[in-house]
Length: 141
Image (cartoon, rainbow, N blue to C red; front, side, top):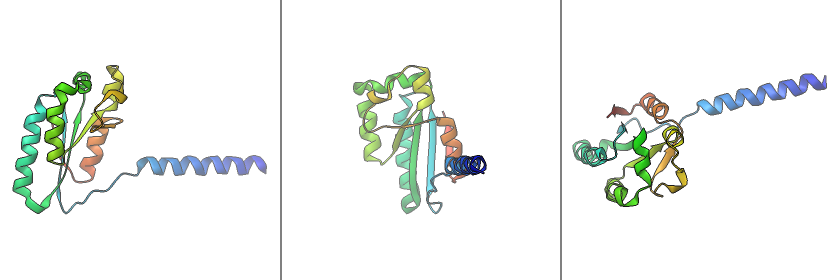
């Protein structure tokens, strides 16, 4: 009996964990939300300018704008001299800059060395797919 109760408790915990893992944030679908996956830090300038133009075009309907940087270029993210102009532009435009954790690990970049303004997502591609499910418009460069 004790064994059955233990197994039931383990099974319920596992199932609850699976459901929690599938949960995702739901974004305002009444607004136009955007996602860009890029493998090139210098493209951030063009991406931020595009976000600004979209914000102007969309007006009140402009929602969130997320940019995930992945691939070998994540090595450039710890260079504050290179990143600061992009960080300032993104902050002024309310753009969320994120690094792909998978790429950070693959190329040996310490996430604690990233600028404080940047976030990290575990897997940039999966993050993008989940945002698409939530209605984000997306592009990969």
